[in-house]
Length: 264
Image 1 (tube, rainbow, N blue to C red):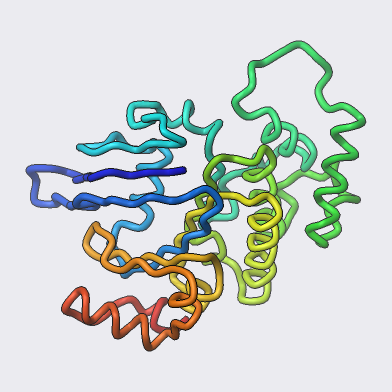
Image 2 (image 1 turned 135 degrees about the horizontal axis):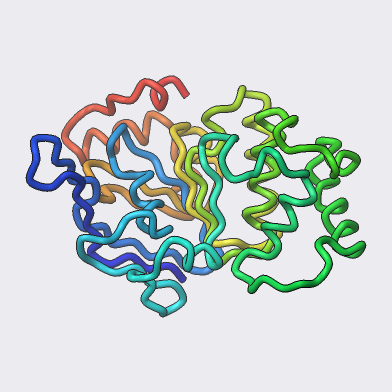
């Protein structure tokens, strides 16, 4: 279970560029929850994921994972508990290393370094089987450099790497936003499949309201650094995009000014 209590974060405090990114977020994710996160520009969506990952220190509040307070853990120490996929397909993989080498690094994340042989035959067989499920032909190119892959292939590989060790929480930060529509749909299908198969607790930021409604069992809407709407179950499945726009206006007192969301 992931629990955020009264989490606050302000950037550039005391300056003309002061930004209150999170203004007291309270959020609890049960094991296996797949939560989609929407909101306008500057609502605090990506900052929320970064605070969970330990990218920035908290101003106040706590982050708990399975009952353990991880608020003071550094980003590297939290990495063994979390899987992350970023918006940029270039992040999350090592371009100059082979596909199988990237997978091996992901497999050993959080483990102590040893002097044993690099990649075993059993590991290669495992990686080939996992890559085959992606249906991108990568299982026959395991010695290829990752830098030679397309953006969609790299993002699918990053998703596989992020979930290889069954992280306690999977963080997806608009991970299809930089892809063309066809490739984005493929990566989203893979996301849904992997999350369901591995029963991963997942937090997915998206600008696409249709995807936010269709995917997951719960949806939260953020505005000015806090959660203004939280819906799950049958009520979520019955939502439409006009419903979300109306709800935003009701709760925030204004209109949603985000072209990407309005056009999705």
